[in-house]
Length: 365
Image (cartoon, rainbow, N blue to C red; front, top):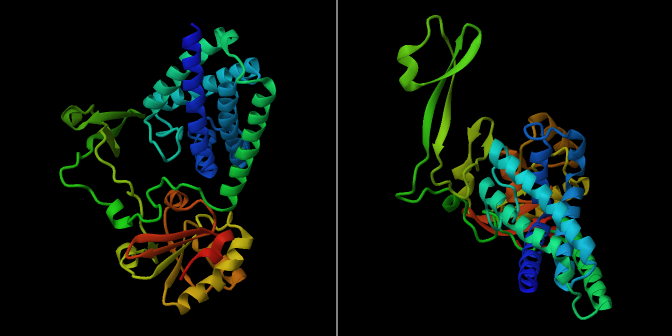
């Protein structure tokens, strides 16, 4: 049993550290997942929505620190109890996501490794099994070297995680696992490989039958009840086919799609501001000066946002902006970049540079 506990300790500790560090590399991305859980479609806890980033930071730092404390054997009773409560919470979330099909990716490993809801739930059940072993046989968890050493290592892990969290929030993720990382080409990211599996859908027809909405397949339409009136048609996904890494990118202006035209530009800069209401005033104040500097170097500069035209006009006037804005889906913009605003430099659709508004001077034109 002692050897089983040692294996469990190593397995759980390393996995918690890896999972926590991946999310700590991009806490804003993890906070977006919490937005989904706290939103109306899942748990409907709106009062927590303003605190998702704080909660995300706390959870991911806790993951890493508990993993370190387990490996060095520091405060084993507290550590194992905390791990048990945390994994029970995670297991509930992943089961809920999988069973009710509400959150398609729990974000357990950020953008580094995508797991389906049921894969995430299975992973948590396996972890729960090993944590229960640690819980019931924690007497075999011995401190590494001595209590003082274990305590110092644990404190260093807290300080190190806090510094990393501060750094990535004020700059960008250290490692970019997203489809819009530097070096990636947007057009290639949208391509469908030859022979790739196609998604299979079933057409579902909704009819009003004596005041009650009922669903019918296309094969059942020949036997509709008398007096049934058509309401809508829905497409139900039967089999998920290949989904390209980039599948929702488009740029529109005045109800016209300009995506290909813009992606074919040789010297292009996106000023990404997914929501102008939430954009940093400090960052917005830097955009026009940068625009003029880039324009002088021959770049085409555009703002891309999901905000409406009235807000765009208001922000442009307040910040004396002279560049045009294009509309793009908010979720897509959140995926492209984490800071709001941020700068993305492209050459014929290939991302060459990215920067947080705090690092705007690092962009090389």
